[in-house]
Length: 313
Image 1 (spheres, helix red, strand yellow):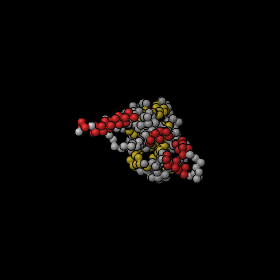
Image 2 (cartoon, one colour; image 1 turned 90 degrees about the vertical axis):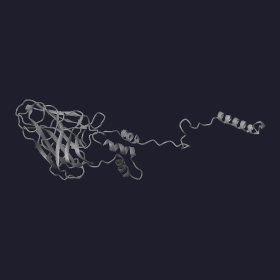
Image 3 (cartoon, rainbow, N blue to C red; image 1 turned 60 degrees about the vertical axis):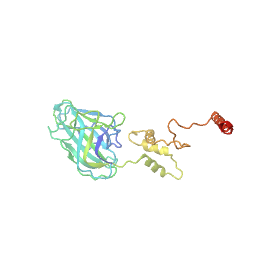
Image 4 (cartoon, rainbow, N blue to C red; image 1 turned 90 degrees about the horizontal axis):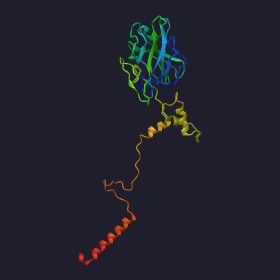
């Protein structure tokens, strides 16, 4: 599936890199979550915040590390931008965006290549707001082409660069999460609007990237069972459980829910009837009872007697 948005979910990724690759001074409070092409089941909207008290200028703090799902073979191109709710606690903090983007070699901590290297903005340019606001980069940034192999992942490290030289505590805050309590997708955030818990934040690409085609559960079951000997040593239900139970961190939907969602869409098969033709409303035929048959017999005898009675000619 090709997408131009990767949502900042509040859900654990399928793979977590061991190391941060951007040049950060502080990653201790950074959260690592899944970047997903769909906002649905993306976890509740929340925030991550980190204060800095360093007199070092500049001082870089990572807040969110997003890891995509496995991608198809491709070479990403075009530009990347942020559509994310952010906030600095004081105008004296002098916070600006810092973003680092790279690709892993599959589910390993080996870097396939860097797509955007330690991007920061100039002092006084596009400073973070003091009230929660959805913002993007000062300008969308061009990606460096990296040839990806099927199964590689994109990792986006997002945070702020503090350009103050005092030990006063200043806090940077970033909002993430893309679904409501029922798993339904939130509304896409819009740059310039107030940052709200009803908005889904995302990273935006000018050229679509292709996510790997996921294997359906039915395919996974067939692949597992078909490799068994003539007399399978594993039941289909076991194969289904093994496939779903390996999802990270845990299936966002139970197997029973999958089955119910499928079955509930199937129209019930009507029961066969002896007489397919429907009688008009109010004129449905009733089953004969012994008393009904007795009345009918009496009426027939009465009719025959009338035919032989001379009075009726």
